[in-house]
Image (cartoon, rainbow, N blue to C red):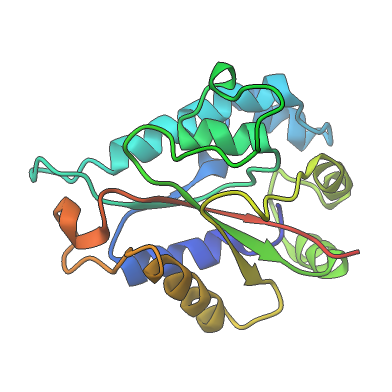
Length: 209
């Protein structure tokens, strides 16, 4: 969700884990950026190619340079719908059977976790109004809120309080990941066993009305 601080928290979390950080906003195709700059919300057809790019970039970043192993990456991304999150997990639509429990397994061999930044809608609006020179306009937040599908209850999702201090948000994320045996790497090019077998982490957000 725009305005939740996912890029800042994501960068701090990546530093704490000693893994790369990817801001998914930087990977939008030009057509998406132009559309949002004109105040037009994106639809599923706009977001799918973008999410495919984000997933590919995350997988590439997990290949630790020169080590032959895989590590982790933190991705700041507004993964609003279950179908979007499944794309980031590496799960294609045909793999999610209709009527089944919406708790899919981790896609492929890379475990994927989602930090769900949860807080008041008013705070999101305030933060977006305060931002300068960003293609995502504050008035488009309502569209994102309407699109959002609450991820709580899905596998690999943990909550981060929007109103907490940044240090506390990062601590919450680290504690949640530690429960899944995800630990900070000891170097900038860690081997797989150092961080728990390759762990893309995505930071999204929620709102309370």
